[in-house]
Every structure is written in structure tokens, then in C-alpha cells.
Image (tube, rainbow, N blue to C red; front, side):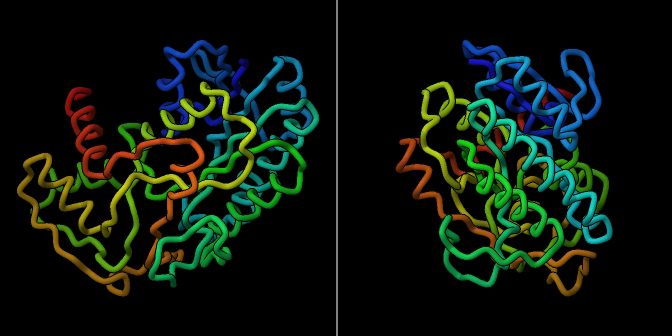
Length: 292
């Protein structure tokens, strides 16, 4: 199959580049700016997207491109909407026209976090910030396009690439004697390589007719404080990681307090095993050590 991976320079895109290394598919890597084997493609340009998909005979589009700065999105919602919603619609339109399958990634932030039970795919979405609103709009644009699609909602994504919470904690616990991290926001960390490997396996297995929305994170539940403590302990740092409330650490964008996603559907449909977040965090930290 011919597979297009957009946003190939981001942490999820780079993880997919690894996932497809040993699979027998022709992969095309694009991003806003080209680099090495990555071709420049502006996915907010509907004509350019459709031409690229058609000219390269793309069978599967994996959209890893996104506006992900949750706080800045409060002031740049129009830009975030253009990337997270309009561009997703462009890719969906191209998939509908050519018969390709679109694989797209959304977020736990489409929910308001007021539940005390894990969120299933059919629970009503109600985002509390601009980022969540733009990601939900992207989902709706894809659903309205008539294309074949799989949308994977994920949460607390991290990797050894780019900027993310885990990498920030690696740096802060090494540099400081004490830090405070919120304990009253609960969810599940997701190693980007786990998500990429799972989706690549689904594609490689030919499971492309299972259109719909799926939830995928690693297993288990923790707070941001718990995650920071685990990073500190795995690295053997001597930073005093202290818990604090969200109210003590105000941010530009509101965050849901409970972001645990129910993964029964993805396990049942695709028969997959999902690792626990602590196991995957260990793998990521080990990789970071080796790259130093």
C-alpha cells in the first residue's frame, strides 16, 4: 500500500516513521517544511492535498499534523481551527475523492472532565478549551466528508522527540531541587511509539474497513504529579516533587480534571494488547538515556 504520513517531523509522525521501517509499504512523508526525506505539503491547501494524494496513488493517509499548544490556542483559535479542523477536512475530502482511508488523531480534551468513569467513544463531547473545540470540529469534518476513516482519540502523549511533559520533567528534575506538579488532574500517559506501532499493525493487518472513532492510551491511571514522580525516580534524580492543586497553578486554558479514556472498543475490534504506562515510560526514559 501507499501510505502518506503528514506531520512527519512531529513526535507522533517521527514515531510512525519508525513503525513502518520494517513493513512492506511505500511511505510518503510530508510536513509544512521539508527536511531530508520529508516533502513540504501545506495541508491547509485543499487543492495541494488532493493533488498529492491523487498523484501518488495514496491508499492510507495518516494525519499526524496538529496545532497542539493548548494555552496559545486560547488566543490563536482561528489558526488552531485552520490546522485541526479545516486541514482535517481537506484530507478527508481527498480521501473521499480517491477512495483512500484517513487515519486521524484526536484528544481526550473533547470531553469536559466532569465524569468519574472512563470516557467511552459514544459519550457526549463537551470541550472546555479552544484546543478541544478545534479537535472536535476536525472529527466532525471527517465524519461529514463521507470518506472511510479511523479517528483515534489519545491523551497525554509523550516521546523522546520534540516538546512534551515527560521531557520537561526530565530536565526540571535534573536542574532543580524542588518542583510542584498538579495532582488533581487525572488521566493516562501515552507513549507515542505505542500508539504508532498499534495503528501501523492495524493498517498492516488490512483492518481498514472498521471506520469509526476509537480510544487509545496506555493502560493505567495517574495524575501529572504521579507521572512527574515516576520520571524523577526512574532517572534517580534527587528533586523533591511536591503536589499542588490546579488552582495553585493557573494556566491560560482550562483543563479537564478527569481524562481517562475507555479502551474496550479498540481492544475488542482489533484484538490488541495495550502496555501499562509505567512500562512504556521506562522504555522511553531508557531511549533518552541512550541518545545522550
